[in-house]
Length: 198
Image 1 (spheres, rainbow, N blue to C red):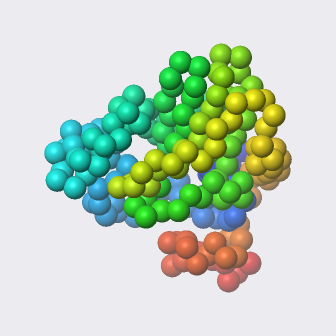
Image 2 (tube, helix red, strand yellow):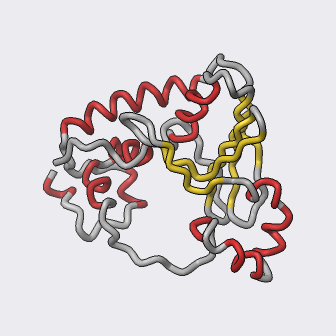
């Protein structure tokens, strides 16, 4: 059990799906596959720019990534946000959901909380006029998913806030039992899971 807050908001979301998986994901159980992808930025930027396939693609979208902060941890009490990508242009904030190659946008309020939560916080700040939410698959083009100009929040923000409140309450109870469901089909921890015991 643990009463420490989750590392970031998506850990809390996954806890709602299966607390046991969330507990095990704290430990590095899988090896990296060595594939080129977002996880190499910004440290491997120069190597990626020299790659014959990746380099021209990155150059085509330089205005998006050049000033972007990748994997930005936004520390907030009690829950941190880990933003895939964020950049600022004056009073406009751009939030990026970085997807794997061929990945489809996964910004439904049940599948992804971070960007909606951040949008809700940022749009209420006086020094920010707009928040732009982008989806961007590796080797694809960035697509503007939503432009938020006013403090009249989309329903997804309110839904995520409600889910966060409920999930954090459960997290604080400290239980990490397996919760079988459809998410089990995509889970890589089946060989050590004890869902049959539940």
